[in-house]
Length: 219
Image (cartoon, rainbow, N blue to C red; front, top):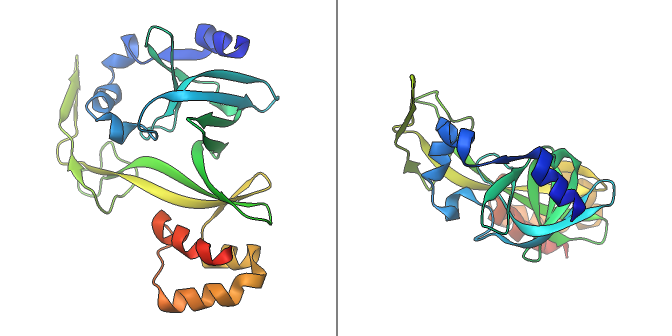
């Protein structure tokens, strides 16, 4: 709790005030909660820091920038900006690992220390506009409006976005892409089962649901 109080006093940024004047914040505020947060609602949780200390509170994770958000007793939402010191966080009994500047929900554990994880984030299709977005999207498309600041106008018109779930493998502190090569490397005794599954099923290894179904043969 002391750690959380210190973060509030010295390291947290309010989502209101100065940040509310930025185009990014205006865009974020235009999104429904089901899009801009990983969890359906802020939930009771525990942050475990890399030094072993911990803090309790109401938490959620932003799909827009992968920041860890928390709420004060009065309902004010803030961003924890010392996130690099966070090892993991549990929100409403769901565990998230902090790795490579993103939070990964823990889906399943395997007996060889491999963990199947999923990262949930907002991605953009900027192929036509070349503006705000950084990543391409493929489905569940929506259109964003225009926001402005004094002296500056930021146009989001016709920028498409979606919430994308990307699978990863995590083993002994390291994060790996979900690929056929990595899966057969970590589960050599299941190579034939994997090969058989792939012959019968087309798997996009960037698609969380398809990878999750494949990983069932490894149990």
